[in-house]
Image (cartoon, rainbow, N blue to C red; front, top):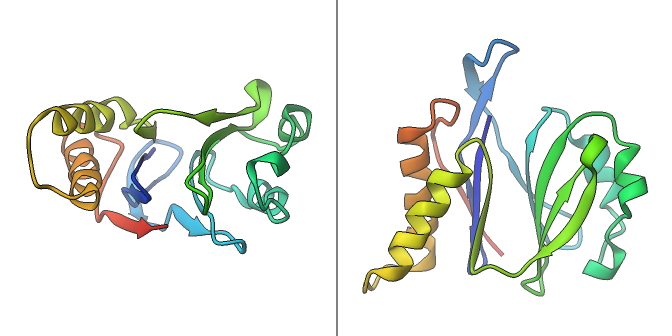
Length: 159
């Protein structure tokens, strides 16, 4: 299970890896920089290599794979792609495969998504000198505290 958050060019995640019984068995990287420089983070079925290979030739959002191509990937994966341009897309494989742009100021995926999104909503409403980096990291930290399927350490990446 996972928490991945995106805001203002930052992407942060927890690093928990769980077994088939949802027991935390270690720490992994969930965010990758694709060859073109875009940031990519995923949750769901653990092995997302097929999806990352499908995204290798993607330079702009216009190159996003079609739903029919995403349906061919075995397993249910949800991913966030943050393009170098700042465009943000949500990508899903499996039975409900789709890819669509995200227009919100911030976005999250995974089992801790609602917690992290709520934290960012609150932080954006309170006058503060906090940077986007600090807000994103705090959102994941709170999700780790509240979501039993998310564990530290937090991994933070900047576009």
